Length: 169
Length: 228
Picture 1 (cartoon, each protein chain N blue to C red):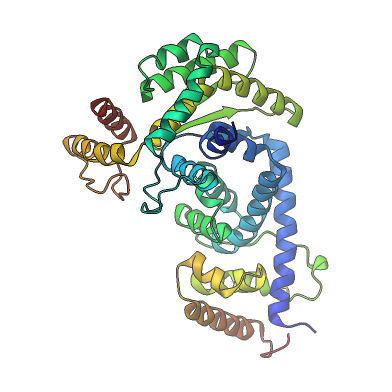
Picture 2 (spheres, each protein chain N blue to C red; picture 1 turned 90 degrees about the horizontal axis):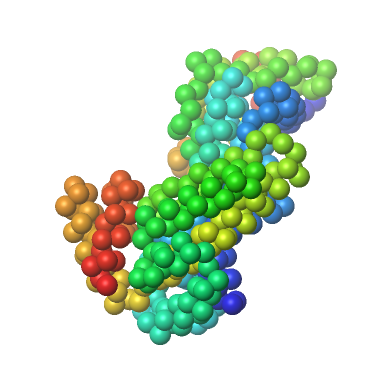
């Protein structure tokens, strides 16, 4: 019986169902969705982010057994979503009331979103989402050194645009 | 004063909060259908199963790579004997599907249809299913009801699936756990069939060639039939 259970654990409908019903899986999906939404909005903009997340979650649903065992599932799904979603011509972040972020330059969001796509996504993932360089490199399919270059140039452009010093606003 | 990087981080947190509120509001207003996509059986999933079975039962063939897991003919026979003992309690359709000892794709899909009919008859959800070349994927739409209602629907569909497909799908899985010698005989037959259908995939099943799932399933069935 135990061998059959192992068989079922991996090959039968029940196992996937069990995963879908388990708290762990639900928490996984909720966490992935939230992290993806935050990450993708910097790439595709607020108007496209729902579609992008939907693409990623659809892929997750179809390939859950593969994705679940990936080292960086969010990064992989980010790439899936990005390749399947056409970004807005002028992507924007959702409007945030300035009072909720009093320490943030009011012009930061539009300046950030006006950066070239590669710089924008790298800066956003690194500092807006807290991703590691290696994870960004993985998600964008570029080298870590290229990620660093994009971030450096993006931050330099932002400092110039916002008129802030190199270290402090 | 905070650094530019810290400002971006704060902006990120604020955006995250906005997006979460937006997503919650959107779900409440649109009430999207919850869909549970339940994938199953055979193919690559079976590979995982075989490896797991082999690992826990000490039947892995050390000479086989991860793409070529193996069970001895005796172990396959033992599993089948155990399953055969349960056959009398299976539905008539499953017994009919298994009377020749082989469950084909067509047969497992027919059984899946019975499961779906059973679910609908019990006021449960329709079960959509397909053979995708790697296994049977079933999808159940749970509507917009409460989690409790969703659990009820899942319970009905599960009960029907187990009743009408449960035993046969284990046979299907076991069929994929072919002894090495049968695997070696099966592959060229399948490859030849695929080639005849216009899919040049000499390394099948470890191939990057995109093969029409229905053709792959047909070739797989044909090859197994020839093997018998």
